[in-house]
Length: 219
Length: 323
Image 1 (cartoon, rainbow over the protein chains, first blue to last red):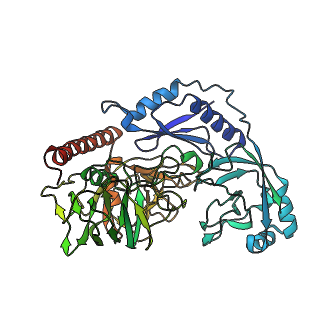
Image 2 (image 1 turned 60 degrees about the vertical axis):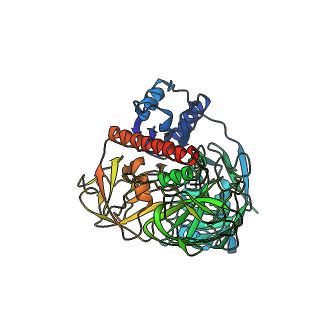
Image 3 (image 1 turned 120 degrees about the horizontal axis):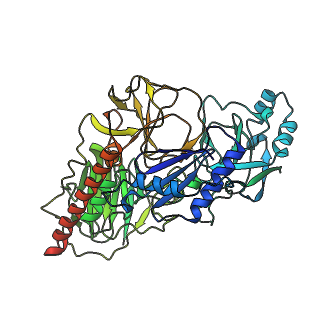
């Protein structure tokens, strides 16, 4: 499996397996992340997967000042066997009930017009696909989902809303995702779920994990 | 023992050493923006360096302490008054029960850390008492202070019937010098600008839209040498992003976990306290740095902090209990 390792500042390494959004590459990122998690060294602070890369955040103070923490971490990383069979993590299947349109999805009408479809057709297409959680990021518990029907792709709002309610289901370009917290957001909002995507008091705090398969159910 | 919030200030939040181990869930590290001042304030009141303390931004709160309390104010130089007396920064101060502490504007710098002996008693969430302002959790109800809040303190009252100000203080130079322009050292990033040294060639001004998530800079726009669209990759506090408007953003303690903008550098850890103290309108200049230099500068800073800790420990515990 080809990869590159670069530094991300002075206390993180970035391992890159690709530079495009690809389900196969993403699955390898998560398999590698799980493999590293199983042998997690004490100096590893955070292990952060993305679409096609994986960051290792190092506690630099765990190393003596005569040592270069990232060089040590890099040597350790290269000693890990990057076998080609790192593929196919098995995610859970999660159904997310969504109320589409109206006050819950103020951009549904605009999206339907943009796609040249009826609103019901947009909802049906959004619910027809089994999505894959590619990563969590941007804000706590925010899932980036792979699998959006290309017909539903639509550019972000020119001016982001100052407040999108928690649970909002959005489309930003060719991606779809959910806003776990209320806050500013530029994606087109087509619906809303009442499920809590992130709760710091829950274990695990995030509803979804990378590799999970997600289906939206029109409620 | 508790602290009553009579007025909240502009944005005051509980912060500690930060939240680690949850970036894979999209959770920011948060924590004290100026970790150096945070550590010294805690040391001055006898706390561990990462104990939860109050981070005050630009304009401070008005607080009433119901018991006698040992405090310290470090970081930005703030107008602080109690019972008609001006209180200096970087010192151990004992306040009698019922004291009302009025913190005004930061005269130099942007953030002051108020530490209290024993630390603020918070229930840690995901391993930290820091407030995650964007995520809306941690610290006090996941938000900045509001009038009427009450903060519990994990300490028995001290014996103090009058204000006592230690005759000695800590000098934070060279780690914090409030110089203008601020000099911020950068490690190379994944992306280069066109021309390659554009980020070093000019002075940058801190924009008003800056916050704990990032310092937005104003100046002549730059472009990345390679303009192809990037997919989101992990970013870190310190990462310097170059969005399409060509004006860099230095990510700080509340940095999002992932970003898709070109990354043109990383501000070194030893210079983060200086970044945390920049206010809108302040200027800064970036200078290039190598990984080896960054490591040395960080270790030297930690060694200065260790010496300061020893000196404070000897003062606080060496003789009388009073400062």
